[in-house]
Amino acid sequence: MKIAIFGAGSTGCYLAGQLCLSGFDVSLICRPAIKQTILANNGITMSDYQGFLATVMPQKMITDIEQTPTAYAAFDVVFVTLKCHQVSSIANTLIEITHNNSSIIFMQNGLGSFDTIKDTLKHCNLLQGITPFNVLQQTGGRFHKGTEGVFTLQQNEHTQTIQTAMQAQGFGCDLHQDMAPVIYGKLLLNLNNALNAITDLPIKQQLSQRESRRQLAGAMTEWLNVCQAANIALHQYTKVKPKWLPLILSLPNVLFTLLAKQMLDIDPQARSSMWEDIQAKRKTEIVYINGAVVSLGKQYGVNTPINRAIVAQIHKLEQSV
Image (cartoon, rainbow, N blue to C red; front, side):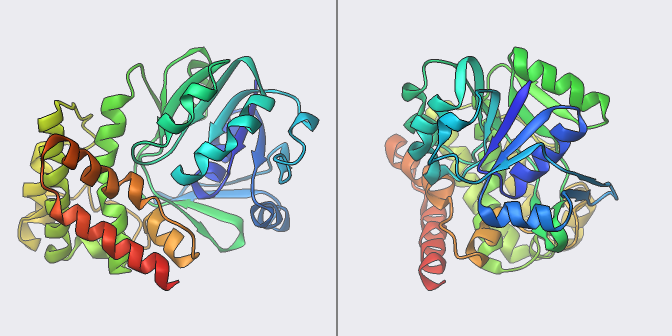
Protein backbone atom coordinates (compact mmCIF):
# COMPACT_ATOMS: atom_id res chain seq x y z
CA MET A 1 0.00 0.00 0.00
CA LYS A 2 1.47 3.34 -1.09
CA ILE A 3 0.44 6.20 1.19
CA ALA A 4 0.87 9.96 0.82
CA ILE A 5 0.47 12.61 3.49
CA PHE A 6 -0.66 15.68 1.53
CA GLY A 7 0.21 18.90 3.34
CA ALA A 8 2.31 17.34 6.08
CA GLY A 9 2.65 19.75 8.99
CA SER A 10 2.79 18.83 12.67
CA THR A 11 -0.01 16.23 12.78
CA GLY A 12 0.77 15.04 9.26
CA CYS A 13 4.38 14.31 10.19
CA TYR A 14 3.28 12.50 13.35
CA LEU A 15 0.85 10.40 11.30
CA ALA A 16 3.59 9.71 8.75
CA GLY A 17 5.90 8.54 11.50
CA GLN A 18 3.38 6.08 12.90
CA LEU A 19 2.61 4.74 9.42
CA CYS A 20 6.31 4.31 8.60
CA LEU A 21 6.90 2.45 11.85
CA SER A 22 3.88 0.29 10.96
CA GLY A 23 5.57 -0.86 7.76
CA PHE A 24 3.95 1.28 5.07
CA ASP A 25 5.53 3.01 2.05
CA VAL A 26 4.93 6.65 3.03
CA SER A 27 5.59 9.83 1.03
CA LEU A 28 5.28 13.34 2.40
CA ILE A 29 3.89 16.09 0.19
CA CYS A 30 5.07 19.06 2.18
CA ARG A 31 6.53 22.55 2.27
CA PRO A 32 10.27 22.84 1.54
CA ALA A 33 10.87 23.95 5.13
CA ILE A 34 9.42 20.69 6.49
CA LYS A 35 11.56 18.64 4.09
CA GLN A 36 14.69 20.56 5.06
CA THR A 37 13.96 20.12 8.76
CA ILE A 38 13.48 16.36 8.41
CA LEU A 39 16.61 15.93 6.28
CA ALA A 40 18.71 18.07 8.62
CA ASN A 41 17.68 15.92 11.59
CA ASN A 42 17.90 12.51 9.87
CA GLY A 43 14.17 11.84 9.99
CA ILE A 44 10.93 12.57 11.81
CA THR A 45 11.39 12.36 15.56
CA MET A 46 8.15 11.51 17.38
CA SER A 47 7.66 11.91 21.11
CA ASP A 48 4.75 12.08 23.51
CA TYR A 49 3.89 13.19 27.02
CA GLN A 50 4.19 9.61 28.31
CA GLY A 51 7.81 9.19 27.22
CA PHE A 52 7.54 7.60 23.75
CA LEU A 53 10.45 8.48 21.45
CA ALA A 54 11.28 7.24 17.94
CA THR A 55 12.88 8.56 14.73
CA VAL A 56 11.99 7.38 11.23
CA MET A 57 12.67 8.60 7.68
CA PRO A 58 9.81 8.66 5.13
CA GLN A 59 10.39 6.95 1.77
CA LYS A 60 9.95 10.22 -0.19
CA MET A 61 9.48 13.91 0.48
CA ILE A 62 7.86 15.82 -2.38
CA THR A 63 7.69 19.61 -2.50
CA ASP A 64 6.75 20.31 -6.14
CA ILE A 65 3.81 17.98 -6.81
CA GLU A 66 1.49 20.85 -7.80
CA GLN A 67 3.75 21.64 -10.76
CA THR A 68 4.35 18.06 -11.97
CA PRO A 69 1.74 15.73 -10.46
CA THR A 70 1.96 13.18 -13.30
CA ALA A 71 5.62 12.58 -12.41
CA TYR A 72 4.46 10.56 -9.40
CA ALA A 73 2.78 7.18 -9.43
CA ALA A 74 -0.77 6.97 -8.09
CA PHE A 75 -1.13 6.48 -4.34
CA ASP A 76 -3.49 3.92 -2.80
CA VAL A 77 -4.25 6.17 0.18
CA VAL A 78 -3.86 9.94 0.48
CA PHE A 79 -4.28 11.61 3.86
CA VAL A 80 -5.09 15.30 3.34
CA THR A 81 -3.72 17.17 6.36
CA LEU A 82 -3.91 20.67 4.92
CA LYS A 83 -5.76 23.44 6.75
CA CYS A 84 -9.47 23.77 5.97
CA HIS A 85 -9.13 26.84 3.77
CA GLN A 86 -6.53 25.10 1.57
CA VAL A 87 -8.57 22.00 0.72
CA SER A 88 -10.67 23.28 -2.17
CA SER A 89 -7.60 24.26 -4.22
CA ILE A 90 -6.11 20.75 -4.53
CA ALA A 91 -8.90 18.83 -6.29
CA ASN A 92 -7.13 18.54 -9.65
CA THR A 93 -3.88 17.43 -8.02
CA LEU A 94 -5.69 14.74 -6.04
CA ILE A 95 -7.24 13.42 -9.25
CA GLU A 96 -3.78 13.19 -10.82
CA ILE A 97 -2.17 11.24 -7.96
CA THR A 98 -4.95 8.72 -7.25
CA HIS A 99 -6.61 5.81 -9.05
CA ASN A 100 -10.16 4.46 -9.10
CA ASN A 101 -9.71 2.38 -5.95
CA SER A 102 -7.75 4.99 -4.00
CA SER A 103 -8.96 6.27 -0.66
CA ILE A 104 -8.61 9.98 0.08
CA ILE A 105 -8.96 10.69 3.80
CA PHE A 106 -9.64 14.29 4.82
CA MET A 107 -8.26 15.03 8.29
CA GLN A 108 -9.45 18.62 8.82
CA ASN A 109 -10.73 20.22 12.02
CA GLY A 110 -14.12 21.85 12.07
CA LEU A 111 -16.97 21.79 9.56
CA GLY A 112 -17.39 22.67 5.91
CA SER A 113 -14.09 22.10 4.12
CA PHE A 114 -14.99 18.54 3.04
CA ASP A 115 -18.18 19.80 1.39
CA THR A 116 -16.19 22.12 -0.90
CA ILE A 117 -14.38 19.26 -2.64
CA LYS A 118 -16.29 15.97 -2.35
CA ASP A 119 -18.37 16.41 -5.53
CA THR A 120 -15.20 16.89 -7.61
CA LEU A 121 -13.61 13.58 -6.56
CA LYS A 122 -16.21 10.94 -7.38
CA HIS A 123 -13.65 8.61 -9.00
CA CYS A 124 -12.43 7.13 -5.71
CA ASN A 125 -13.27 6.50 -2.04
CA LEU A 126 -13.72 9.70 -0.02
CA LEU A 127 -13.38 9.33 3.73
CA GLN A 128 -12.95 11.55 6.75
CA GLY A 129 -10.75 11.29 9.79
CA ILE A 130 -9.72 13.32 12.81
CA THR A 131 -6.73 13.80 15.08
CA PRO A 132 -8.21 14.04 18.59
CA PHE A 133 -4.91 15.00 20.22
CA ASN A 134 -2.42 17.85 20.16
CA VAL A 135 0.86 17.73 18.19
CA LEU A 136 3.37 20.57 18.37
CA GLN A 137 6.49 20.92 16.25
CA GLN A 138 9.57 21.42 18.39
CA THR A 139 13.20 22.10 17.57
CA GLY A 140 15.39 19.39 16.08
CA GLY A 141 12.69 17.95 13.81
CA ARG A 142 10.68 16.66 16.76
CA PHE A 143 6.89 16.39 16.62
CA HIS A 144 5.51 16.08 20.13
CA LYS A 145 2.13 14.62 21.06
CA GLY A 146 1.04 16.52 24.16
CA THR A 147 -2.39 15.03 24.93
CA GLU A 148 -4.08 11.64 24.84
CA GLY A 149 -6.01 10.17 21.93
CA VAL A 150 -5.50 8.11 18.75
CA PHE A 151 -6.05 8.75 15.05
CA THR A 152 -9.70 8.15 14.20
CA LEU A 153 -10.66 7.19 10.65
CA GLN A 154 -13.73 6.27 8.64
CA GLN A 155 -13.89 2.53 8.02
CA ASN A 156 -13.14 0.84 4.72
CA GLU A 157 -10.77 -1.84 3.42
CA HIS A 158 -7.76 0.48 3.38
CA THR A 159 -8.27 1.88 6.86
CA GLN A 160 -8.87 -1.59 8.29
CA THR A 161 -5.44 -2.61 6.95
CA ILE A 162 -3.93 0.54 8.44
CA GLN A 163 -5.58 -0.08 11.82
CA THR A 164 -4.30 -3.67 11.98
CA ALA A 165 -0.73 -2.64 11.16
CA MET A 166 -0.73 0.31 13.59
CA GLN A 167 -2.15 -1.74 16.44
CA ALA A 168 0.50 -4.40 15.86
CA GLN A 169 3.09 -1.70 16.61
CA GLY A 170 1.29 -0.55 19.76
CA PHE A 171 -0.35 2.51 18.20
CA GLY A 172 -4.06 3.05 18.66
CA CYS A 173 -6.33 3.65 15.67
CA ASP A 174 -10.11 3.89 15.93
CA LEU A 175 -12.48 3.23 13.03
CA HIS A 176 -16.09 4.40 12.60
CA GLN A 177 -18.63 3.83 9.85
CA ASP A 178 -20.46 7.10 10.53
CA MET A 179 -18.06 9.99 11.07
CA ALA A 180 -20.66 12.73 11.54
CA PRO A 181 -21.10 12.31 15.34
CA VAL A 182 -17.32 11.93 15.66
CA ILE A 183 -16.63 15.18 13.82
CA TYR A 184 -19.39 17.09 15.63
CA GLY A 185 -18.14 15.76 18.97
CA LYS A 186 -14.57 16.75 18.12
CA LEU A 187 -15.76 20.27 17.30
CA LEU A 188 -16.96 20.61 20.89
CA LEU A 189 -13.39 20.04 22.11
CA ASN A 190 -11.85 22.11 19.29
CA LEU A 191 -13.66 25.19 20.58
CA ASN A 192 -10.73 25.56 22.99
CA ASN A 193 -8.22 25.96 20.14
CA ALA A 194 -9.04 29.63 19.70
CA LEU A 195 -9.18 30.38 23.43
CA ASN A 196 -5.76 28.81 23.85
CA ALA A 197 -4.41 31.06 21.11
CA ILE A 198 -6.05 34.12 22.70
CA THR A 199 -4.72 33.46 26.21
CA ASP A 200 -1.23 32.65 24.84
CA LEU A 201 -0.74 30.05 27.59
CA PRO A 202 -0.01 26.31 27.55
CA ILE A 203 -3.29 24.37 27.59
CA LYS A 204 -2.72 22.94 31.07
CA GLN A 205 -2.06 26.39 32.52
CA GLN A 206 -5.02 27.85 30.63
CA LEU A 207 -7.39 25.19 31.99
CA SER A 208 -6.16 25.83 35.53
CA GLN A 209 -7.76 29.28 35.38
CA ARG A 210 -11.47 29.29 36.12
CA GLU A 211 -12.29 32.38 34.07
CA SER A 212 -10.77 30.82 30.94
CA ARG A 213 -12.66 27.59 31.61
CA ARG A 214 -15.92 29.52 31.98
CA GLN A 215 -15.37 31.12 28.57
CA LEU A 216 -14.85 27.66 27.11
CA ALA A 217 -17.94 26.39 28.94
CA GLY A 218 -19.98 29.20 27.40
CA ALA A 219 -18.72 28.45 23.89
CA MET A 220 -19.47 24.74 24.39
CA THR A 221 -22.96 25.48 25.70
CA GLU A 222 -23.75 27.44 22.56
CA TRP A 223 -22.63 24.51 20.37
CA LEU A 224 -24.65 22.05 22.47
CA ASN A 225 -27.70 24.31 22.04
CA VAL A 226 -27.16 24.39 18.27
CA CYS A 227 -26.83 20.59 18.19
CA GLN A 228 -30.05 20.20 20.14
CA ALA A 229 -31.89 22.53 17.76
CA ALA A 230 -30.46 20.73 14.71
CA ASN A 231 -30.94 17.23 16.19
CA ILE A 232 -27.19 16.54 15.89
CA ALA A 233 -25.68 13.64 17.84
CA LEU A 234 -22.22 14.03 19.43
CA HIS A 235 -19.63 11.31 19.96
CA GLN A 236 -18.42 11.15 23.57
CA TYR A 237 -14.66 11.75 23.87
CA THR A 238 -14.38 12.11 27.63
CA LYS A 239 -15.51 10.02 30.59
CA VAL A 240 -18.58 12.23 30.96
CA LYS A 241 -21.27 12.96 28.41
CA PRO A 242 -20.76 16.09 26.29
CA LYS A 243 -23.66 17.91 27.96
CA TRP A 244 -21.87 17.79 31.34
CA LEU A 245 -18.59 19.32 30.17
CA PRO A 246 -19.67 22.99 30.56
CA LEU A 247 -20.76 22.32 34.16
CA ILE A 248 -17.47 20.61 35.04
CA LEU A 249 -15.42 23.38 33.40
CA SER A 250 -17.32 26.02 35.38
CA LEU A 251 -16.53 24.46 38.78
CA PRO A 252 -14.17 26.17 41.24
CA ASN A 253 -10.53 25.22 40.75
CA VAL A 254 -10.39 22.73 43.64
CA LEU A 255 -13.43 20.76 42.47
CA PHE A 256 -12.40 20.94 38.81
CA THR A 257 -8.95 19.56 39.61
CA LEU A 258 -10.51 16.66 41.54
CA LEU A 259 -13.05 15.75 38.86
CA ALA A 260 -10.99 16.43 35.75
CA LYS A 261 -7.65 14.75 36.43
CA GLN A 262 -7.78 13.02 33.04
CA MET A 263 -8.41 16.34 31.30
CA LEU A 264 -5.24 17.72 32.89
CA ASP A 265 -3.11 14.66 32.08
CA ILE A 266 -1.33 16.48 29.29
CA ASP A 267 2.13 17.79 28.58
CA PRO A 268 2.68 21.03 30.55
CA GLN A 269 3.86 22.79 27.38
CA ALA A 270 1.11 21.55 25.02
CA ARG A 271 -0.61 24.29 23.01
CA SER A 272 -3.30 24.30 20.34
CA SER A 273 -2.68 24.19 16.59
CA MET A 274 -4.39 27.58 16.29
CA TRP A 275 -1.87 29.07 18.70
CA GLU A 276 0.86 27.61 16.49
CA ASP A 277 -0.76 29.16 13.39
CA ILE A 278 -0.91 32.60 15.02
CA GLN A 279 2.75 32.37 16.08
CA ALA A 280 3.74 31.31 12.55
CA LYS A 281 1.68 34.17 11.03
CA ARG A 282 -0.56 31.73 9.16
CA LYS A 283 -4.28 32.01 8.50
CA THR A 284 -6.25 30.04 11.08
CA GLU A 285 -9.23 27.68 10.78
CA ILE A 286 -11.45 29.84 12.99
CA VAL A 287 -14.19 30.12 10.32
CA TYR A 288 -14.55 26.32 10.28
CA ILE A 289 -14.55 25.88 14.07
CA ASN A 290 -16.09 28.65 16.22
CA GLY A 291 -17.31 30.28 13.00
CA ALA A 292 -19.20 27.09 12.14
CA VAL A 293 -21.04 27.34 15.47
CA VAL A 294 -22.05 30.90 14.62
CA SER A 295 -23.19 29.95 11.10
CA LEU A 296 -25.25 26.95 12.19
CA GLY A 297 -26.63 28.99 15.07
CA LYS A 298 -28.02 31.51 12.60
CA GLN A 299 -29.47 28.68 10.51
CA TYR A 300 -31.31 27.15 13.48
CA GLY A 301 -32.19 30.34 15.36
CA VAL A 302 -29.73 29.86 18.23
CA ASN A 303 -27.83 32.89 19.56
CA THR A 304 -24.05 32.39 19.78
CA PRO A 305 -22.51 35.62 21.14
CA ILE A 306 -19.53 33.96 22.85
CA ASN A 307 -18.36 32.12 19.74
CA ARG A 308 -19.00 35.23 17.66
CA ALA A 309 -16.75 37.26 20.00
CA ILE A 310 -14.04 34.57 19.87
CA VAL A 311 -14.08 34.65 16.06
CA ALA A 312 -13.64 38.44 16.13
CA GLN A 313 -10.71 38.18 18.56
CA ILE A 314 -8.90 35.61 16.40
CA HIS A 315 -9.40 37.75 13.29
CA LYS A 316 -7.74 40.63 15.18
CA LEU A 317 -4.80 38.38 16.07
CA GLU A 318 -4.50 37.27 12.44
CA GLN A 319 -4.37 40.90 11.33
CA SER A 320 -1.79 41.88 13.96
CA VAL A 321 0.86 39.35 12.91
